[in-house]
Image 1: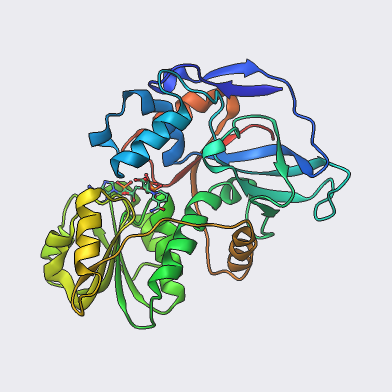
Image 2 (image 1 turned 90 degrees about the vertical axis):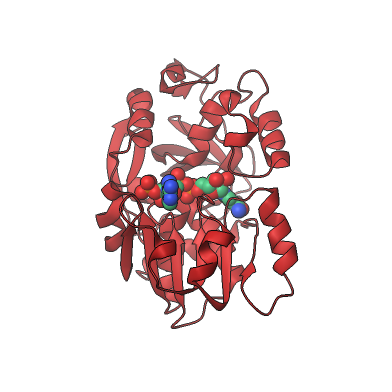
Length: 332
Ligand SMILES: NC(=O)c1ccc[n+]([C@@H]2O[C@H](COP(=O)([O-])OP(=O)(O)OC[C@H]3O[C@@H](n4cnc5c(N)ncnc54)[C@H](OP(=O)(O)O)[C@@H]3O)[C@@H](O)[C@H]2O)c1
């Protein structure tokens, strides 16, 4: 079968078309014909990790070290990228009862990757669920990573109706779902993003959109109960003036100084820093499906590229022009 492989870290040019063996499902696995793969932060990070010093990584040094060891120190250990997919079940192992051939599915492989292929195997009790009936394959393939991360992180934050929430990074994979989930709770939500993504963030239901190239939300004078900062591009100190008296600054990406601030402010009855890691469970895939089918979550697609053009897809994903999600299509 066709796959996109890479054997060295670097630019999108390291991604090449290759022939690899088609997998065979084990007793507890399903074989999926892959119809769409969402490109996300993890794909680009894994592709470029050999050239990424700890200072350029958005998280604390131990996470950089762990990622470097798991991706491969000098060259990539796992030659196939792609962390989330949509497709159709082609065959099932003899112990599988929850899926049958022909079922439309979507799923998440996270850091184990391996989705830039025509076929892949997934444990039937893993991060795989029936695809929501109201989404295309391409749309469904852009849901799992950002949806699971936003769902599990926002559970901790217990947003209340009427609260004012700001998502810094609302056009990205995590932020777009954090925005929609916050709206679901009845919060008033402001999304911050770059110029080319303003319309797509409005379409997600943001009450207000701020283009970070034109306006600094920390100087706007508006105040918030919660600021979710996806890349940690702002800081607690910068956000303090626009946090309400008991407001929370929640950076999804964080370095050691933020952990110190989180510990320091933990018992404060005033403004606080909170941090957390996503802790998704396979059952959360079904929660996402239910939210999508109820119309509470959606995901738009900007451009799709055939598998053979995955390098071009990565180039477009990394460009400032992309208006939304970018998807690779292994099979029609
Ligand atoms: N805490 C956890 O458990 C956890 C779990 C998974 C991932 N993460 C972290 O989450 C991060 C990736 O998030 P993601 O996948 O959502 O990334 P993404 O899809 O690349 O989105 C990044 C977002 O940040 C925005 N952005 C870029 N520069 C900005 C700036 N200067 N000011 C404000 N916003 C800016 C982008 O806006 P435009 O594109 O519109 O410019 C976009 O909305 C990584 O750092 C990763 O380590 C944390």
